[in-house]
Image (tube, rainbow, N blue to C red; front, top):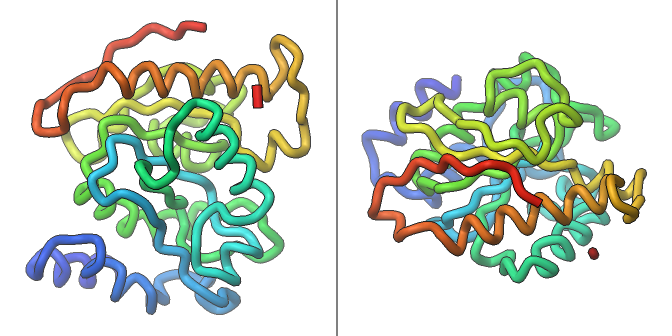
Length: 221
């Protein structure tokens, strides 16, 4: 089980590469039966910003990398439009294996897999978490509210003690299905959200300084 693996990991050298090794052979939930590759996540191990999606899709399952399909290409465009280098961010998912048919992860799968994500958050120590879509937002904020009610509103991730600022955003897959750029449309709202993330990142102190964000909501690719 993940709990015993994590305990073993905590007793060894605490870094992402040591965590990756057992994660790649995880069989804690039924998703391992149909996966091709575990998608551990990638990016800056000391990132100020961490992005959490729902689960790997077909392209991610094939390559073992997060957000490399059409949704990933759109995410890259969103980050680039806000002058946030993808390499400066750590990107992962709430579950590490592709749910069949790209369905949403089921509750038991999230419970089985979130130990890996919690350890990643401990190691990376992000100052901001962006959650993409319903599943990671509800997990991070312990809420049942949907993404249309939570996007663009700051919340706090409290599962590991000291709170981390969370900003929910629409998932790129949703934007591909609803590519409306006019004022109030999904892409317009996402542009407001990513600009807020960028401006907040620019105001952050170095990570060695403890910070708690209390920022009101303000305010195309």
